[in-house]
Image 1 (cartoon, rainbow, N blue to C red):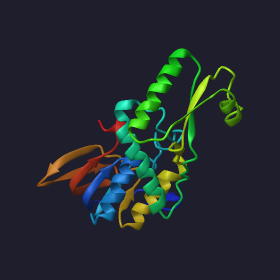
Image 2 (image 1 turned 90 degrees about the vertical axis):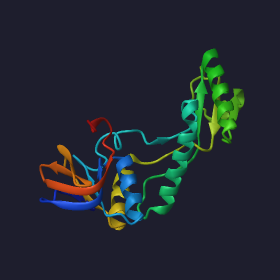
Image 3 (image 1 turned 120 degrees about the vertical axis):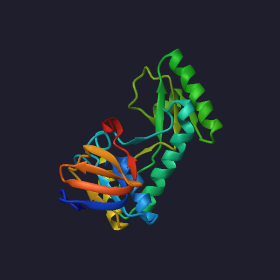
Image 4 (image 1 turned 90 degrees about the horizontal axis):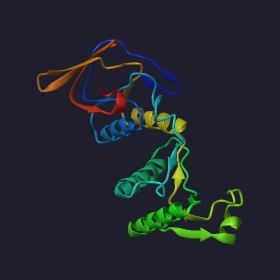
Length: 216
């Protein structure tokens, strides 16, 4: 089970309404909202909580560098991070100080202008900055940078804090977490499922697979 500063495996069979496989940010959020909704939740993580991509990234929460077809999803994603930061008792290192997207070449300038227009179409305020205004705002940029867009929507969260904060919130909501508990076999059992691993078997009504590239 998960506890602050400690992770271990509880041996034997367990029962849950929903088993969540994968303890990255996606699995943690799924387990948190299920637990808050009243489900008996058990999260199974093969290693440590947020021990893979969810703690090895830069933590950037930005819109300016996202592909246009995906903007609606990222806009909602940024709002979800804001809601998490406000609702969790534990700090996730969240901030939204804004950011810059820069252009050096003619092709960069065209792409930057196009992206700025698409962001505005989605209601995101974007400022175009160049010349002395850009040098005054960001004197650390190389002289080759010809223009930049600025948006107050861009921010960040601390990957190392976020996973641990979400895990603690799951436990506070009544959920359970097993770490170092890989699922090696899944099978139907009546109307539900049986998930077998080195630490024993978990039976559940539903399964959420959130193991990313380890989903097999």
